[in-house]
Length: 170
Image 1 (tube, rainbow, N blue to C red):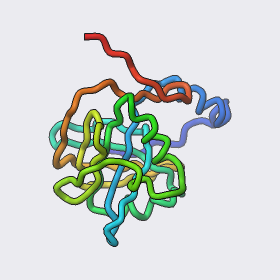
Image 2: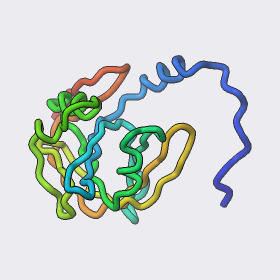
Image 3: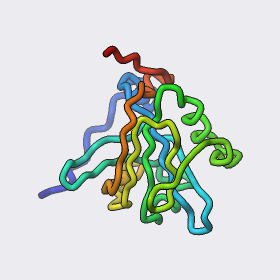
Image 4: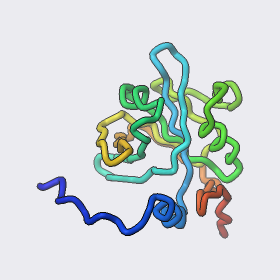
């Protein structure tokens, strides 16, 4: 199977226009968490999450190649993808901002492999760091899900550059 194609034609738009177009796709919001070798934790906000396969259970997310946390996430064997609920927008902001250690400000439990699971999430996936694929200015991480939990709640949604809840009807 051929995994690459000849280069596409030069786009007729700039990155600002491209980001504006992408922002029209509503997506859920996640916080990816892991444990460092020294026992401390690292987490980041990501909206680039998707399912890949049911058998084996695979999911993906992406991280900017130049991110300071790239060596951590590319080198660790496991991570947890926490799907945020509508009332957790503060967590999305907290983990998207550099500064103080966010884990001192949030409630979490540890997964069976010792990685942070944020309390109140609508679902979480504990993943083995199966593979990584550099593409453009990002790296695509594929995780093989070893454990997941579901706590149905209203999801946090990112659309048009804003976070909001998605009001579900029964």
